[in-house]
Length: 296
Image (cartoon, rainbow, N blue to C red; front, side, top):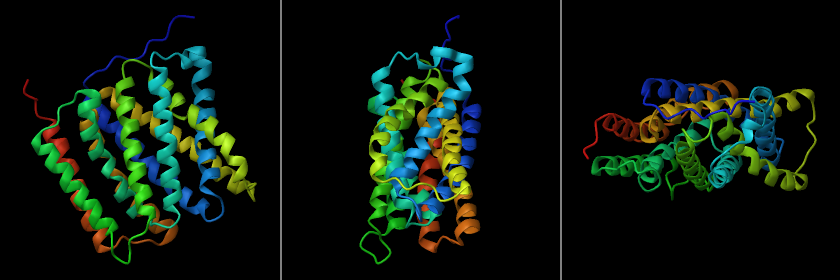
């Protein structure tokens, strides 16, 4: 069969934003289902369903068309590191969301786009200015407002959310490095391959057979939502720079508030809104400045 070429990088920022916003409409639904399932099942089992079903669905959709081309990568090491980052980010988030409101959990992970700004310089060569560094500091202050360390509302699971955000930032950076080298379908396949192998060895110690067909359906749906969402992320990174599209992760807050209210009756408090506004404002500052042409 003819060789399947990875798409070349192109500058189509609006298309990149469209893909990122689509992903951010899917993720809150997945997170709500995770919180629902976490009341009954261990995070390790939920993560296993999430990544294994992701792997199976990607293979089922793309293997008939791409054949073994789906496995063809020029950066196997980078792909495996991205898989570990995805697994850790998912495990940390799923472990924390059981006891933290959905909107608050998402608000804390909003530090990820700001971490991308920091990491994109050494890893991608995308310059960071004093203005962007100031925005990152302001954004982190917003996260502190949400989690309020030292207060009665602080929970140690908030630290897991921060860990999840950093791992996800690394994942986005690695996906950006792979854009134009490997096909997006290849990247989303490898993004869970190593994690699926590791979790398959771990899950027998935490396994609880789903109690009903509806639980089976909900657990399996996590893979579909995650696979489609991360395919959109991979496409977004193909069409625009990481530090431009990353701030649009903030559109997740809209869906997270809706999901949290409809599924669990959660209403974000004043500090969650305030901290989120600070983080989002910092991210939008970065995105706005990122549209300016950089001086050589």
